[in-house]
Amino acid sequence: MVLSKIPAHVAIIMDGNGRWAKKRGKPRIYGHQQGMESVRAVVETARKVGIKVLTLYAFSKENWARPLEEVKFLMGLLEHYLQKEVEELHQKDIQIRAIGEIERLPERIQVILHQAIKKTAANKGMILNLALSYSGRAEIARAARLIAEACKRGQLSPDQITEQTFARYLYTADIPDPDLLIRTSGEKRLSNFLLFQCAYTELYITPILWPDFREKEFMAALEDFSRRERRFGKTSEQIKGKA
Ligand code: IPE
Ligand code: IPE
Ligand code: MG
Image (cartoon, rainbow, N blue to C red):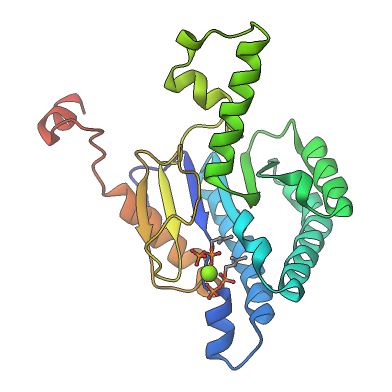
């Protein structure tokens, strides 16, 4: 498949693991386990087609409110993934990053995560950005706090606070906004994901549940994206004239 337009940054809300398991009469955690295979497939495909940044919503700040057993299992999966995959990601020239309240993660995961980030920091093939304990509103409030502190210290003045300045205080400071946001499992909401960054992002919602979302489904989403006309407020004629 030849894609006429490749998004530089793809963000994915990986949803539907619980329902996938339930349909099979299995516990929710079974769905999370199978979902890890989709993570591998999507990372591999993204690298292959030349996507520059892949952001995966792996655990939201709100997800802390799930039953403790499920939270523990998800943390275990994350730990396992990092321990098992970092070397291979490194070989593939993938740079690992994380956004969210990382300090809330279990200590041992923070250690492994920081090691992975450090080890892969110079890689140029693709950025794999993991959203962990992430909340878009919390990120925006944090940016406001950092900006207020900078103003108080006299390093920034209020009239310098533009959209661009604000964006520099987000976790995604040096990452372009997502071009494409994919959500699996058919839910039509953002669930507090990248609220500031997705102002003009193309949305792709598929009923496919995350454990079933593999290369074929990802390619279908990319193909759909490549056919879209992004107008950013302009008219279609203006966009075509420019092309
Ligand atoms: C997504 O699947 C994984 C996480 C949110 C961690 P869910 O666990 O939300 O699955 P559903 O939505 O209940 O089916
Ligand atoms: C969003 O999925 C968070 C992740 C995929 C990590 P949820 O399943 O938690 O979202 P809601 O609560 O149904 O909106
Ligand atoms: Mg869900």
